[in-house]
Amino acid sequence: MQNAELTLTQEWDKTFPLSDKVDHSKVTFHNRYGITLAADLYKPKGAVANQDAADGKLAAIAVCGPFGAVKEQCSGLYAQTMAERGFLTIAFDPSYCGESGGEPRYMASPDINTEDFMAAVDYLSCRGDVDVERIGIIGICGWGGLALNAAALDPRIKATVASTMYDMSRIAAKGYFDEADSPEARMTQRHAYVAQRTKDYASGAYDRAGGVVDPLPEDAPWFVKDYYDYYKTPRGYHPRSLNSNEGWNVTGTMSFLNQPILAYAGEIENAVMVLHGDAAHSCYMGKDAFAQLKGENKELVLVSGAVHTDLYDGGGKDAIPWDKIQAFFATNLG
Image (cartoon, rainbow, N blue to C red):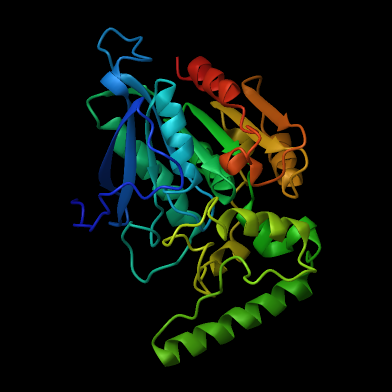
């Protein structure tokens, strides 16, 4: 098993400034499908914070999301901020996206994307400066649901934060607010997907689905306006972000329609925090996911007045409860 050679950007090209409290570097690791993933590694400056063990090893956190974003956006902000607070962190691009490997590009998979999180844990577990008993993950938006799926499968993950989460399988199969939850609606989707597959195969190329709509229609739903405000403005735009540009392949997310990801969330024994803005259009998914969890080490944190993208970057009003997140990991990663 070897990492493929990836061409990684060396200049700082994030949507947030580099902190003088961390050391930053680029790293790569591979998943069990042989795809090499690219990540930004953030380490507390001098690597002295949070080193409670006698051997000086650090607690570590892997971060990914949102679904269709890249590590230069809010997953990197989460990773850098948690490194400022004493954790070794990585923010990674998922398979087929950003600077990570995988062909064809712009594909997604409930299985492979769950595996991406577990591969990040593999990588962290094999670093000499990481305490293998103190590894957690943060999943943002659609990666919040995938983080819960990974935690249900991988007991090495001692603590999980699902922030402003989506259940991508639920959205795919039932639509927003479950308004398309019918066999007929799903069959319509299936016919559209297979027609697109035939078209793509005949042409030898994959059509893209389009990212966040641009220009923004005046009658767009308010949560679409919320996405536009992040992905299509200097606040969060990035040239490698699918959401900021041409989106996934049309068939790229097809498998989510048929593969629920939270079936065994109730069997997660380790700690989980579900974090959501109570004004977010997606809040119902966070609350419903939390209702599946069992045990006293599960926590639902609702941020008053926060909409979905406020928990991407604070929304200009410090909406992300960093102290709560830090305390959660400090407690549950020992």
